[in-house]
Each structure stands twice: as structure tokens, then as C-alpha cells.
Image (tube, rainbow, N blue to C red):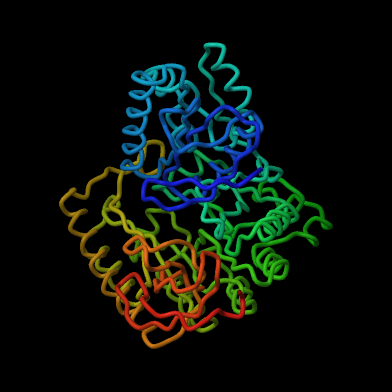
Length: 482
């Protein structure tokens, strides 16, 4: 692979891996969770070996792939609009272009896309990307192609991803796939299958390779990273059937974090996403032990009401969640915590909603991702519960928690005023080409004048001002990591 520089729609310079000699062009877009973006890099690697390099010019593409999300109706509608655009370009400019759908929508809407609506040429589920060359051959011969079979093994541990639209500094490393939790609102167990983990040796090899190529910040990814458990392969649910030797030599998430931290002591290590009932204090203590493990935990709660949590099949209570927050802050006092929150879940009353408000006031999250409930076909809630909260009530409740989160975010960012933070420069600021933008170990965005620094530098920045989401400061010199 060679690295070239491209320009994205915002004019940012991006490093894109290219394979010399490849003639065909792949245009790939990703929507939804970070796992989808990571999967797209795996797809690009598979297709690079089939003669495709990525392009950001849709009209010149021989193959267009969209990696999709089904977690909310809005995400699906966005993808449908993109498919309309792809087919318009195919019709008006490039009739030989092939269009494919990857990811969770592919798993859920396979028949509709291919047979009923006839808007794509191939449909490929999250565990079937290695079959893309065969499927594309089918398409080239004039046949529709589909593979959405779910796997019982970690599928892509042997593939070195092509880094797409990267800044050359930060990268995703996938460690688990699937989810066993069966939250009633969520499609993930149906579209991505049961939990299985990746060989830790292949993870460390990828981390070492990224460091050798200049990357300085990685995020270990999974639908539920705390469920990571390697005992030689297989589904997590089958661990009890493993041999005594397999159990004795198994690697859990806390072990994996420590292995990664030791392998590259100057590499920043993040992880996402955690689940409250699976995040053990061993993980938090490992974070505290190693300076290069970032002090941020994304800890979705979804609701502050015990009754609604039970209806969601969340396997934690409000009280257990609050106790976990207390323990995290005792072990890592400056740890930032972010949330996912859903309002308007079926049967949610005003009292239930006020429980969510009071939980937010107790925790005072640094930032969060908030949504109103949208029914997802095929989920337990979609099959068994009436979507009975009026839309205007959902909108009002969503605005209330967004407003409250903005207040809390501002309180939390103001705590950094006057302090000096270590920032890894990731890119140019969106608002000014005279400023750099990067993140602290706590995942807070910080901007400061460029000076003589460059992307990839660790810089000490004294915080002089802030917004509710961003620290603003002045560089005071390189940090010891540079």
C-alpha cells in the first residue's frame, strides 16, 4: 500500500491508502456506529486485493457501496436518499456502475432491496464481506448477489484494514462482534449475531502495525467491548463448555487493555462501547494503572427509570448504574463519562421521564447522544409493545434532556479553565484554518493556534476559554509523548 493525499468536501487533507496497479474505483460511504466505519476499512482492504482503490468522486466509481445502520428509522431514511442519488448517477453518467448495500440494513432488508425495489445489485451482511469477490463476480455476469449469513467466529481478524479518509493519527481496531444482551429496542443481535471475540495476538499485531505507520491513538471497538473474552475461539455463550486449560488461559477485556497498554506505552488507547452490567471495576483499575489508556468511558444508560429499564431488558438498575458511576469517579477522579439516552420508549410516563432527568442531574455527564424512540421492526419492542407516547411529547422530552445536557457539558468544560491539558493534534479546526483541533485523554476537543506544531504532535495546551463542547487555549510546548 502507498499513502496519497486527497481532499474531502470540507477541503481537509486526508491520508488514503492506495494499492499500486489497481485500476478500478470503489466509492464507499458509512453510516451509523464506529463499527460500521471500521468494517468499511476491512471491505476496502478486501476490494484492494480485487483491483479496487477508493475514490471520493462518485461519478468515476465502478463500484459504490454504502455501509448501513438500522438502529433508528432516521438512519435508514438517510441511506435510502443516498441510494436514490447513486442510482441517479448510474442512470445519467455511469451505466456500468454497480451499487451494493452492506451492514445492518442489508441484513434486515435483503429481499426488499433486491427483489421488490430492485435498487441495488448486491446485498452483503456484516459477516459476509470476505465473500464480496464472489458476489461481485455474480453481479458482473448479470445476476443479483446476496450473502447475509451470520458467523459464529470472529470473521476478519486476519485482514489488515485499509484506512479510509484517515488523518494518519487515529484509527479503529475491532475486537469483538455481535451482542448477546437482547435489549428490546435494538436490532444489533439480529443483524450482527451473537458475541464472539478476536484473537488477542492479531489485535496486538494490528496495534503494533499502526504505531509503526505513525498512528498514535486507537479505539478498541465492539458492540459491547466489556464482553470481550478470548478462550481460543467460539461464541462467548459457549465459554462454560470450554476446557479447564482454555478457561485458565482465557483473556478478558481488562487483560486485553493491559496487553495493549504495555505493547505500545506511548499509544493512546480508547474503547467503545461499554455496557453498564458488563463494565467491571477491574477494567476501571486497569485504566487508572496505565497513563496511555484514556480517561473516558462511554456508558449508555438509555433511561433513568427502573420500570423502563426493565421494559428495555437492560440488565442493570438505576441504583446499580449510579453506584458504578461513583466507583469510576473514586478510582479515576478526572474520568469523563458520556451517555446514550432514549426518551419516549413505549409506556414511558412523565414520572419515568423525571427519573431520567434526576439521573442526569446526579451524574452530570460530560456529553451525550440523545434520541427519541423509533420503533424498529423485528425487535422485541417492535413486535410486542405499542409505540404509544405521542410524537410531540417525545420531541418535548428530547429537547428537555438536550438542554440539560448542554448545561452540564458547559459546567464540565469550565472545570478545565486555567489548567494545562495534553492534546494530540488530529486536524485543522473546522472554524479556522489558523487553529489546530485535537482531543485530550478525556476525549474533550481542544483548539489552539497552529504555531509551529503539526498533525500528530502531542502538545501541552493551557485552557483559557471554553464552550459547552470545546476547550480553547494556547500551546505552551510539546508534551513528553512527542
